[in-house]
Amino acid sequence: MDLRTTEAAPSADERFAVDSVLGPPESGWFGGRRTPLDGHVAVGGLSLARSRRHLLLPALHALQERVGWITPAGLGYLCTRLDLPPAEAYGVASAYALFTFEPGPPVVVHVCDDVACLAASGGDPAGELARRYGPAGSGTAVTWRPSPCLGHCEHGSAALVQAAGERGGRASLAPFAPGDLDRLGALGADLVPADLSVPLALVPQAGAEGTRLLRRVGRVDPTSIDAYRAAGGYEGLRRALEIGPQEVVSLLKDAKLLGRGGAAFPTGAKWEAVARNPVRPHYFVANADESEPGTFKDRVLLDHDPYALVEALTVAGVTTGAEKGFVYLRGEYPLAAARLEHAAAEARGRGLLGIDVMGSGIAFDIEVRRGAGAYIAGEETALFNSLEGRRPEPRNKPPFPVDRGLFGKPTGVNNVETLLCVLEVLAIGASAYAELGTADSTGTRLFCLSGRVARRGLYEVPMGTTLGALLDMAGGVAGGRPLRAVLLGGAAGSFVGPGDLDLPLSFEAARAAGTTLGSGVVVVLDDTVDMNAFVGRVARFFRDESCGQCVPCRVGTQRQEEAVARLASGRPLGSVDDELALLADLDQVMRDASICGLGQTASSAVTSALRQGLIGDGAHTSNGRRR
Image (cartoon, rainbow, N blue to C red; front, side, top):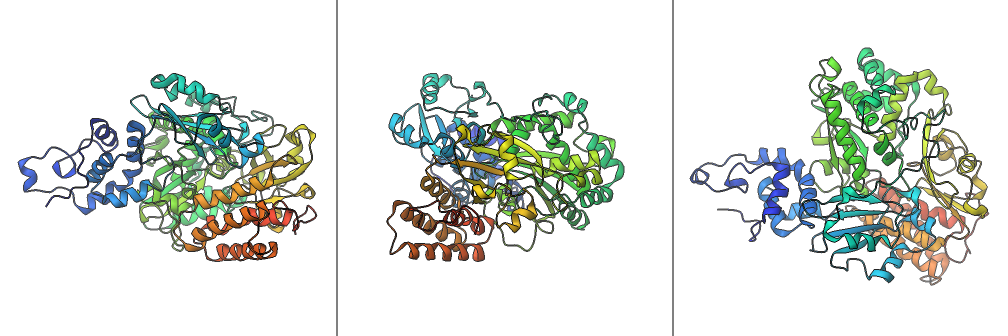
């Protein structure tokens, strides 16, 4: 019998969207025209379906961008093409915030209302839009929706424009003002996201003497491989091929390079574990899904130095014996996606990617895949599931990715900043790199300064630079107002107070102080910021972004948000001490029993806010230092 995934036939646009990713259907079994032969022969089966499932997310993107929503007929046709149960495909698509399941206006403007923009604006961006234009989702030609962090925190406000149709696509607007919605609405059907002006990156040190990771930003054309090579590009890959994989790993170990994604795992040890694994094939993934609120360093690097990531990922591939690499890029970065695709194509055309990398006889190629608005996909095993066409939910460990990662094979994964640090190790040598920073935290580090700071932007400093020195580089608190607190490490980080400005920004110092550097977030908060609203937004973020797979995180983040709201409003359930005891219990349970880092760190900022006296009436205050 035939399996009918939906009664509605797909429209021409829905077919075009799906076929643009999967190619034309091979037979009636996969959505094509039925022929007499189809009644006797079935081609494909389970093995073919499994081999093509990884195309589910790109096809969902195509459907959303062409039609404007994930239609039942379009999803049904996609399921027929992939031989996938509709319920399973719906479960995947519904995990992502950038996919919608109801028809609406062709242009959607996602407006950031997360912590960095909340602190910078000193107001309520979503509330202002609702007052002027009606509730989120209303409108005929253009509508707006509140959004978690869009990665343009240095501007203090941002929006992502998502337009459907033949000339549709995505574009970022930063800074964003409510009046911009009128301008977009006036364009109507003539709106082409690609024609909107590109936001400028705020990098006060761009091209400055002494910078390593930022030295090409603003100085080298990010769309020209010749300009990149003239500035020293691809010398790192050349050296890696000359000295061989074992020596590259030795250099990374001698340089004591630690990962910059938050876990600070030794890079050399990770690469060595993948390289030595006898199971084939190997994969290497660049995790560019930086969704931590307040983080924008990867976006700046990818927008303005994309060839560096292509080169660094190629070094990782040839060193670990991988033949295929993926860049998993957050879906809210349209400019980075375009520039990475262009950079990879140019590298491929010059023989720097493909079947014979730089004439070495080694094969390695790169594919750019876009996420679709899921914070949890930044967790490495959830990222693998996303790439494989499954719900972005974390896996149990062990097995670890170096043994069983993407497609069940040995996989290396690093974030963008870590990979670019590898090029610096190859450029200056392990000894010189280890002399930068501290003994246990070598090299330089990128920090994303936002909020109530005089000069917001991306800064690069040697590891071990104090928090106070970093704030001084950025001009201190805007307007000379008193410093209330600093959110260090993002929503998964913690608050530190004015008494902590002497804290060295190194892995070991942060760990000893009971905080974290996380993804390099530094959100500065002065005495004008509504801290109840700010901490409440952190709690709501984790409630919204929990994937729901494990009970401690799914229920704990919900109860945490409720308790924070009660404390902030001065209406505790029982006494304040009862609420504090409840939050302490939630903190312990989420840390001990959650399956992944999201749940394990979801209470960090709230707990530190309580220690700093940043919630409620201040009855549980500290003296401005960590306790």
